[in-house]
Length: 240
Image (cartoon, rainbow, N blue to C red; front, side):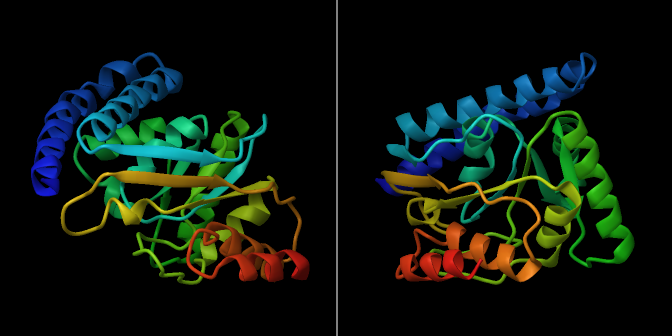
């Protein structure tokens, strides 16, 4: 049954996504806000399909306070790349360079507010990423990054990539960590399955902390839903 659900979801999602993505250039004529509204229609469609076809529900713990923030989230599935845009108010998002090169989708992502992260992490690439993030911050946008760098399976807790600390220092924004467990129902391989996804909005972390302190606090907070993670959250909070 889960395989049939997954097949139906995949067919409908991509069939409906094609016209949405291809029509972004029309929205782009009316500015970034129009592109954002356009993209959120796509995210709403994704939400409707995962609820009705896959039987997935989202439980949100915590709230995002008003203001502009630097969000740092766990990344276990494609699921959160769309769902967090709705929950977090449409932040600009740090994306891999390879994604920006996908025909049409890459154009749509950049018009929405994509910030390119280069895995080679050269000095010029980091400077370019910081300039783009600052420009979007000046537009009043919050920024979203997946600081571990890539999708990971439930239970995996890789160290944060260096770009996170650089952006934290450059942006001067308070950080809100986001923990989630989407990988439990939305595995990278194999059929998706019904269930409840938990997304936990963490406590606001102020700007200006030392690199070791901010990385420890964020790493612990985004992994708070992983097994035996609660003790690490306490240790990181007290160390900062």
